[in-house]
Image (cartoon, rainbow, N blue to C red; front, side):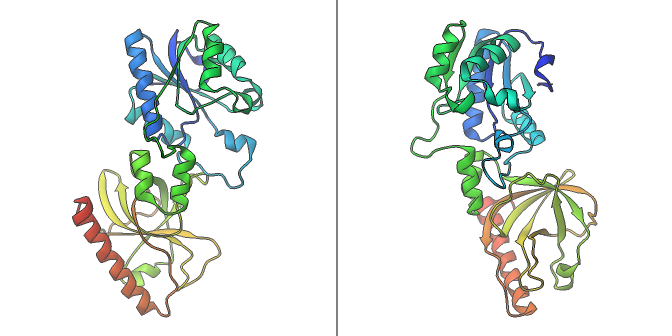
Length: 313
């Protein structure tokens, strides 16, 4: 797959193109991009994804505290892993792009810059200023430019499959359903930092984490069963995302993972954590002994889940 960091660098000639933020690269996106690849192969043309370096919501700032499902690097990697597209072209979502009406976007960006001969859109996707570029509108204007427009079918009629829907599921802590819609376990990449080693003192040592991107969405606070990727190793454990109410009741939530059967030093290393199942909400206990007892129960539940539900333990 070829990555173009500027639309002015694009040099593959006439193509089949799909446009979007593709935040999360969920199974709906993959369906669109599979149709894109199929049409491109049958037409003997390259398949091209035109996406944005920054999310449109970050430009418009209409949602306070808006977070991404995927960073730009994650998005590129997922498209590479999950699809067969030939190229990704990145453009900034800026004042110029935000003011282009859909017919100008089709002509000035897709036709002139990318030499598009076919456009693939998601079943409910729209683009251009004000979101006025529906499938019907884009198809009508593209026909005048001798561009064919195709509409990918809805995957799950009755359940709106969108990045917004997945965000809502994660806000609710429903990482199992979100994984179904994403096609993979939601996760984040983080740096291991020094902590206060409180977990070690109560018999459950943890690694403390800082996500590499502050723009990355984290699910509802609580205790989760997680998969941990350390270099080439796959491990499992429990993650606590919260304020540690029994010990500190911090003003800002922290992330810490107890990795099962693991004792290596990970300070300053970069690891990846993927959410598998939510165990419970964070609870304030009356004593450290109560906390230790609950963590022991959580670990038993996690191990049973991995053994009998996932079959990976």
